Image (cartoon, rainbow, N blue to C red; front, top):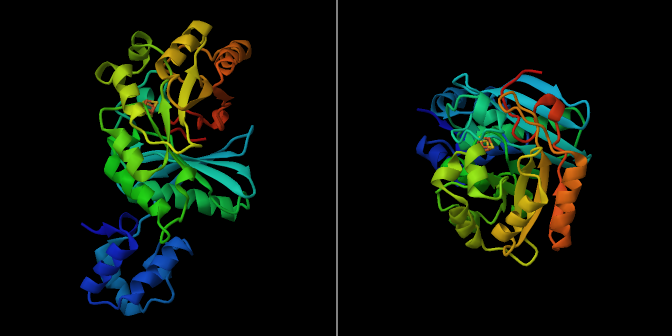
Length: 347
Ligand code: SF4
């Protein structure tokens, strides 16, 4: 099987080039075409001799997923990409433009998600097919970056969030390798503080992974007690809140860092002040900030987002206990690119 260039580091690729009996400098040259000039075809790398092309094409893949559709939000500067992998599987990524200098890409790490959270379109509407490779994860960033540049939306991608389709800690090899290239000076040279992994909490020693990578963590907690959480998030039955919190306690944070607690607000389900009290009892001893997300309607769950009034009451209670609270009006809701809405739809 061909090795994908984006699954390799520059030193690994250089070794491969040398093993083929090709001059070492060709590796750096090809790397420059890919990472700096965003060219994903050996034939289009005009500095390469023609005679080298068949050897490279037989040995390496440089495939980038095809863009099947781009949906542009009418309410904010968000663009959802429906992408087709080499095996025909579809997955999604979203580009969110904050300013001409700041843009975030929300990447998927799986096709579908095996965790099947009930409020989430990915988990409830898309059949889980497979994990994405590091190359497929990085491709999403290249595609979004090219789109942002070509359309003069932003000069660069500044932040990456692993909050698209799939649970990152059930795809540790793919996610770790993609992050290594995001951080590498040979890759995207991003700072650790610009990358966030979001997890629903799975039995995978994820604190170790976060401590090793040094990136930021967001937790899809969403419900403040096991009874409620297990009802909406089946993963809670095998990895209940006590275990999740025990894992969070192992995360090493610098002075200024916090763990983000993601909390979806569903009308009449988990949005009462009593729930906020339970939430504080659960994670209040940790360095956390809360991100309240009004529920984004999906086909499978007959529920409504909490009212603004209820969200404000909930936030005010958390604030009164000195916690930082933000209310995330999900970007891209009208293109089904909001949190929990990745469901492989066109337009
Ligand atoms: S919310 Fe996250 S973990 Fe749950 S099903 Fe959706 S993608 Fe998977």
